[in-house]
Length: 293
Image (cartoon, rainbow, N blue to C red; front, side, top):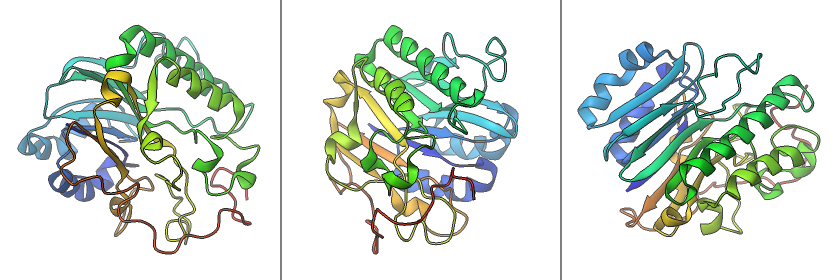
């Protein structure tokens, strides 16, 4: 079973990229984030294409903001939008944003997640991000981590090696101790960061800002993750970033993360496909995308 996660950054603009990619890579389960569509808009934009490709799908949308989807060719059972205890924003007791959808696919509970960005350290949105992750931790624990996959744009780089320049990111969101601790609590329910386990010493990124040169110099971040419970992690045959999908005309600023379970149809082909041709040094004067100019 091939599982993929991809923040498409506005699906309506990305359909000409997504549909051929589905036909080429043939993932069995796909988690999409930042669709920026209502449920009706998602159906109009890509529903027919998904039907023709043999996918069942579930979408949790709210129009021009957020939006997550789950596509499956191996079953889509017990669909759940959001998860128990999901906080709202700006009011904690308000309705949850469209940031999570899950279902059971071939016996595995798969979550497609778009974790709140956090905006600025110490802001209300930063507190919301931490609370959201705390509720996710409880939900994963209750669901049974061993047969769970948590996939998506997590908006946290788990370690300093997951950003192009740790010094440049100091004091900004995505790398703070509190965010990493909140993510660590989710992992500690019994999950494994399968890409990092497979490639412990490699420079591997999944997001590159649109600013000129960032992608070509490989000045990126690894914030799109697939976390798998023990029963699933032991089945991993390959894990990689599909960097090819970040190239070309009108790409998302994220690349898909792909994990093969039981069998690797393209072989164990490396941490990123294709690898960057001319990566810049990690250290330098380039500011992270969330830094103020």
